[in-house]
Amino acid sequence: MKVEQIYTGCLAQGAYYIESDGEAAIIDPLREVEPYIKMAKERNASIKYVFETHFHADFVSGHIDLANKTGATIVYGPTEMKTGFDFVSAKDGQEFKLGKATIKLIHTPGHTMESSCYLLTDEKGKATSLFSGDTLFIGDVGRPDLAQKVIAELTQEKLAGYLFDSLRNKIMPLNDDIIVYPGHGAGSACGKMMSDETTDTLGHQKRTNYALRADMTKEEFIDAILTGLTPPPGYFPQNVMLNIQGYENIDNVVKKGTTPLDVKAFEKELKKKSVIVLDTRDAQTFAKGFIPKSYNIGIDGSFANWVGTTIVDTTQPILIVADTGRAKEIATRLARIGFDNTLGYLQGGIEAWMEAGREIDTITSISAEDLAKNMQKDKVNIVDVRRASEYNSEHIKNAINAPLDYLTDSASKIDKDKTYYVHCRSGYRSMVFTSILRAKGYKHLVDIKGGIEALKKNGQFQISQYVAPTTML
Image (cartoon, rainbow, N blue to C red; front, top):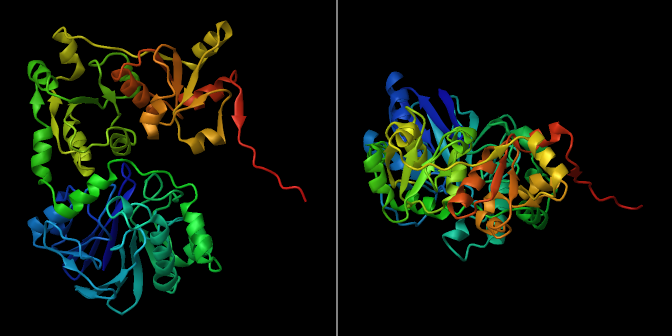
């Protein structure tokens, strides 16, 4: 019996390949399914099942294409949801034979109502692994507020109560030596304090995961998991509906997205209503020259998360500017989160645009040293676009917190007629923020190279740090 975790860092997502005696199952596959098919073929195995832990919000699953290409059966937990594809709505406790192994569905409502975990038992009848989806993470549990975006009466308090019961009655009674394989790790928006580790024993989680504390009441649990919960990215509900209703074959989406467009063809597409130019190059390279009104979201950062957070509408027409040879990667990663309306990429890149004599724009990006010199001459406005929790931990004194996560609200803190110096942790998010606001008419934003790490290293900026309140005895 084989179990392999296929972890995708951009989405902080874990898919799983399970094989026994020539039969394979895939749990929570990404949308591009060829790697799973290739894996099974190389091992002379046939894919029998596609097990889904729930209708995902943060990515578009590959369940439909994988089933169409292999004949595999799609399995979800108990649900009456009307879908655009055939699937088995399994009962709590229903077992599926996979070669000499057995996979049992454990219905664990809470993250969503159909949420389920899958318990793997080997040929000797020993339970070895729990594929916990978004029910149980390493160090955390799934957020209980996403389903209400689709079904209004499912309040987060009600879902949190279901999750408490699922964990106590279904998961915690399982043996301590079972390996937990979660759906996500640190960086995913599906939880709030996940570990960097992507597997653990259930016994260790029982001892260390705050949400599995044995003496916790339901009321304490609900309060703990709802406290500090921030709104999810705006594209989540659209991804849920794609996973329920169906979607275009990813091969067709990527083919369209990788259409090479010369400068004239690119300009023609650019004139269409509401098209966004998505420039995926490195932030500092972008700053030196780009097509006016381009958004810079670098492919080598948390690309999917920031595309979905800042653009939101998955039907948005997008034109790509990329480094040579990366268009397919970009179109694929956009498709993973449901952005299927990619019109093509600029053939020859920004160099071709400039050689054709077309207009370019630039963004001023300065070092911490240069900012310090400016501060000696005059008062400066500093904008910190990190998350509120990061800002509260430590920030430059008098800096404005305008999180990239909530770009619309953050933009309201900026006066178009004033100059602001913008930073994040290292320089990735600040360029996303600055480029998008520049496209919207904010012409006086200056990027700070290296973010707060560079400002701290410079030593000339006063840092305000969080001090925990003390209790008088």
